[in-house]
Amino acid sequence: MKHQSNVDEIIPLGLDFIGNIFFEDSPRNINSYVSTTTKKVGVFVKESISIIRKKIKKHSLDVVQLHGGESNEFCKTIKDMGVEVWKVISIESYHDISILKDFPDADLFLFDTKTVKHGGAGKKFDWKLLGKIDKETTKQYFLAGGIGPNDAEEIKELKLQNLIGLDLNSKFEISPGIKNPESLKVFLKQLRS
Image 1 (cartoon, rainbow, N blue to C red):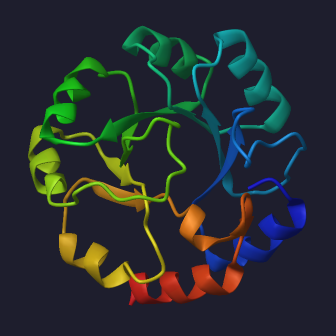
Image 2: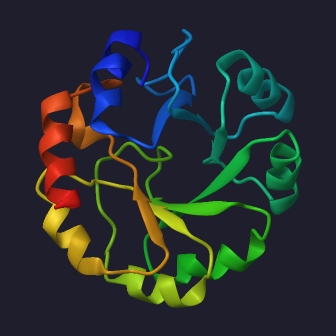
């Protein structure tokens, strides 16, 4: 989210986090400060530790989400800055799950669809893999990648122990970085019912 007025529109919906993307190649890249009492997640792709440190301070970030090829040591260094660290794992097949054990210092995982552009493709991976993932890790995780307004019932039916959140992005936007409050409201009502 990159516009204060849009953030103010959706906060009353009871969201736990809002995301600020700090990746210049993304149409959602933020260059202004957004004020909110809701926890803020800073999304980074192959960024340096020094830049991440500056953005944490400048944007009052609570969480850093890492989308590049970062190591566990990198995750630990960021975590030592006093924020949560979410490691994105791009999923195409069951083989991609094998790296979960390589990130013991990540606070949680975010499973997204494998693409050449580090997310943002609006596509789902095979959610049947989540049952296997849930058995492979005791770490909690978020689901991302192509979740849309008509997916609430399917998500509720997953009944996965470690799935604790959803990354609601492109399918809930009017344009990149601008959320549709009405679409989110309807989806969240269905999800929470």
